[in-house]
Length: 364
Image 1: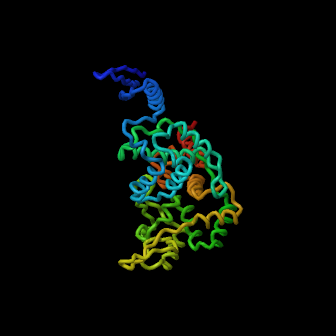
Image 2: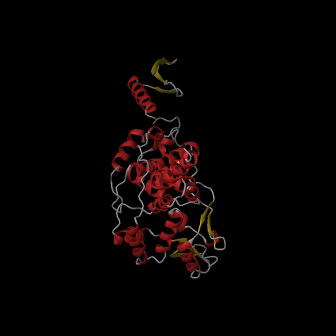
Image 3: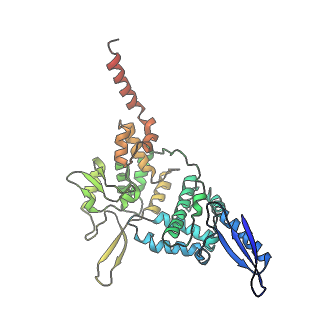
């Protein structure tokens, strides 16, 4: 609640001292010459505190969201070892939507309004943005505010904390049928990208994520032990992938054609030359366009690169792998994430139950 105290000094001048007190927030005070200004300030300040837009410092009024995002790029994203492409894309969208707003003026209601406009729009590949992706956009912005609050002291609260997440689906299981897999691999061979076919085979064979594969380095492959060691994963834990069969033969063949002086297994044609040392710097290949073209050529719809990971897990389940084994291969810390594949291993589960029944009731 706000209280206004009338004061008169020794010279007879009158001022109005306003104090706003709300439970859970420090008291805010200000002094005005006119009662109308005092009342307006009290009303505005109380509303701003309730909406999480009021800060003791003036930093939130000095800086725009665009400035915060730019600094976040420099201070945070530039030093991340993992790919930040998605975060950059999400933050670019927020910057175009409300980048001109001062941090002071960004409220949970404004964020919810923007997010609602994002939902069900289509990306450049014609896919609709659903609840899960919309949540990722919001999370990316939330981390900007967290850094601005904890490290830069530009804001005192994070408005994202008051924004409820969209309810996400249980997780889809979209995997390639045999005919689809044959068509897709054939289409991958016909693209302009020389590595796409091998990358897709590796994804289907190991269940590795896209960035884990395109960022693969020769030092990570142990041909003698027939395995790949992933040092940088989503869970920040090393993971070992068995390299077997067709995938192994492809990688052995590919190793004979490796680019000298390049650490990446699948390097991009685009390179940079250091002016001082003259050394060539390589980057991982970008397969997005080639991948989309291959899907179109194969006539496969409603399928993402990440679904190759689902396909690998599904094939494992259908060939008798336990959920614990699937979780270990995919790098999941709990079985919760792989329960979506449980229905695909019904035959295996039935045989286990049958064996158990035979053992305990066989003589009945």
